[in-house]
Image 1 (cartoon, rainbow over the protein chains, first blue to last red):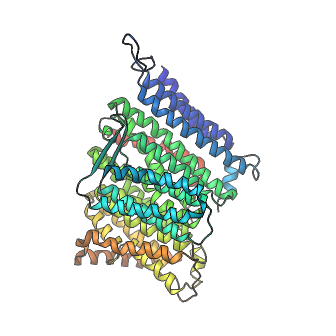
Image 2 (image 1 turned 135 degrees about the horizontal axis):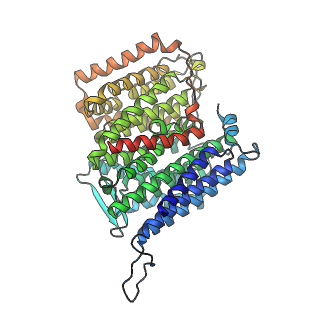
Image 3 (image 1 turned 45 degrees about the vertical axis):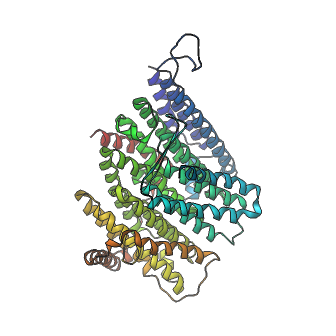
Length: 110
Length: 475
């Protein structure tokens, strides 16, 4: 059930990238998509249990720490790329205030 | 050897950031890195046994450095060195050198990593650094070209991440070796990410615009080594997991024909070279076991060609036919074109013979067609008029001499190629190509539509390629 929601988020983000005209909206859609991917990592790591992997007195079912550690790297990379893209978009908005991707593309393709 | 490897992988990042602190020493610090990499790459090519490193235990970073990595590392080192020589007297800022060295370091990281997450991190760093290099002129147009690149590569890498997780779920490890037991969805998603990043087949159609609109030294780096970061892991998979070998080979043939098909009709010199990168990557993939040597010769020749094309008086091939080139520039252009068309005496010949020998029977027709197409499109360069004056930028000749010298020296890798039959066959292919050029292509003015290169179509074609890959992995 949760898996279905996760994939729905990824797909919605992906279609947002294609269907939204505005460049900012495209970047936000990409963020939605990456949220879905991150959620999937968290979901998979919780398959073995929900407890944080810290030593307890009695044995409990731990969540798998490896995917969580990995996705932390991916989150950092993802948000730095988004920040970089938004700076680029800010620069582009001076010439193209509407930020419509196909308009920008038309004027910069030889 | 393992400590040398670790120092070698960390040094570019350390030096890269130091360049920003010591801007007076930028060029000297920068050139030291590719020299070190050349030595390391050569050592790896001739090393008897591969080096396998497991850092931080079972879930840590896995590195694998063998002969195949050696070829790719050497390519990266020589291309970076040539680009630095080219920019030597060009008043580039310390920022440019820093990005170049960081790019060099992250590309090296791809060539020795053996687990999905290290590969992901390295590929994302490459994406960011390549964006900064493309946008270095700070014009609106360069920012858009870079943004488009970053967007497409980041979207592809999101699919890749899902694939990597599926591999982990099946094998409890992110190592490449787990791909054999992974579900088909994982294979399809990971391949989609790498095919897009590497500019292969329809998912690689972002490449012509990006590579042709960047500055000359940047396009040399992008076409020479950066796209190989998508190709290298695919070769590794094909060698590690025999079931994936036919998929990789099929994509090799497909992309070789697609790229060459566009290149034959292209009238813009830099776009033609970019389409040719797409096609040559197909040659690398078509025979994974000998891909390393082909990647080396292609990296050298393609960066040389991009540097030369940046110094021609025009980009339009129709206009170039009216302006005579100087004999020396034409000579360099012709040597590079001969090598890529596979004429003897240059290592492009050895690489092509080696690849053709390693093909499976069903690939032979397609790859020979692609070889003829290569000869046709490079005839456009070879038959340009000569006799003009030399107008190259300073730093041009050292870079070209390094690259072309490397092409001649690389012949030693496969001297057995020099048999009568091979030489006759390659001359025959080139003659057929030149004949077709003179009879038909020279007068042709066909303009292929660029609709598949539009941003939204590029993103959309990812879903199509994903479906395609899924069916192929199921079969």
